[in-house]
Image 1 (cartoon, one colour):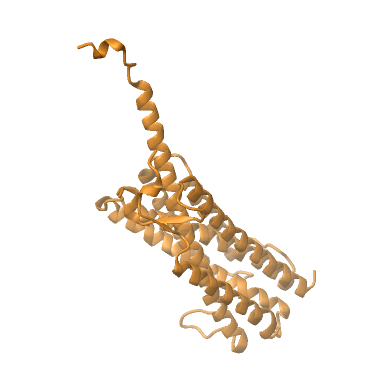
Image 2: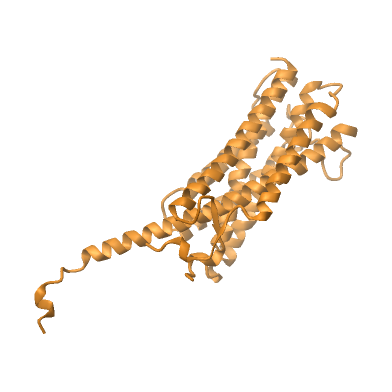
Length: 261
Length: 54
């Protein structure tokens, strides 16, 4: 078994990720201060508006993560064969980003349900936005499950990439569902080419929260990518060790007569 | 549940979920790093490392 020590190994916690981690922590602390203390309660929603500083950035990050997964999957499928490593770094990035996307979709669903209970009087309603969001959550859970199925890594990567591209079709549907159908869910708080639905301190707190959550997501994706790489190395080493063991078992036993000549 | 309590639950659940995931990622990296005998902390390799022994 070849030890990974023999290779050029660097620690995951590089100065960059350490700095990013501290930056993310500090940014989230300020976000909590702004969202829970500084920002005023809304005239209509009251204190419940503070949930939106988590809910809205969380779904933006989920969209962004799934977009990264899709682009990585496309690059894996198109450029993978030409590269020495079969484009597996694209596959890794796609997997890491999807996992973080699922986490933040979950956060979106939970904070949305709590906000809905206060604002609508119910945790759940099968309207277009909520239904398509839960579908998004489930399809990317399926994508992550597919990545764990035992198969050749490149074949598994191709299957996962195709599923990622199919799953991404739902992202614009989720986003525009409030425009395409009559839904209980309110329209987008911020949208390109449209006047913002919120202003003043609430507007800036929301924008700042999006930046803070982005730092957290980038840190998570970076570390998860590296851990996936470690998992691959471990699996490769285990496979090599098993093959070596099997080959040594299959060799015919050496008898004294073999050395007589 | 009052509005304030709902907000507290929402922020609390989010903090626990994200922190738990971050901790899981770090610990998993550390565990596999130890299995691979490359130090106590989680480790990373560049893309060429899997095929290039030095």
